Length: 200
Image (cartoon, rainbow, N blue to C red; front, side, top):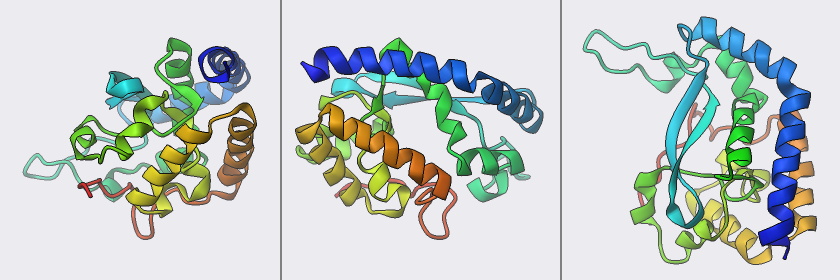
């Protein structure tokens, strides 16, 4: 009942309210990122969602597209803009995903949507993370985020799938707010972005 009826209604309601309340901030961030990224403040990428169905995720673009003399993109650390670093630190880059929630591709809470190329690398247990919609935040995010191993993340994801409830979602949302204000676990030690998953 909660997963199929209550949660979708809460998702859309919270996403609409969130967009209305945060619109002034999002507007200013979009303008700042437009200047930093040659007029392109948004980042689109394909991600697998419920049952592995691929959708297009939207985030604020925190890195520019600068390349070296050979035409290759510079490292993530070199391309991360000053405003992008602030946006990422405050997790504002994730807020445009509220549009994905309204479209029905995502939930407020659920396993984070990763990359399509990871689908073939999961064990049968790890694949269970796709039994529910992916989320803007999740159980793994409030238990270490990018500072824990892939195996730990997947265990947290599967645990969430098996224990999903309104009270658990509420707890995750409240812990997420705390994590954002404390800037905990944004990246692994010495990393700008998360290390790619290469299989078990």
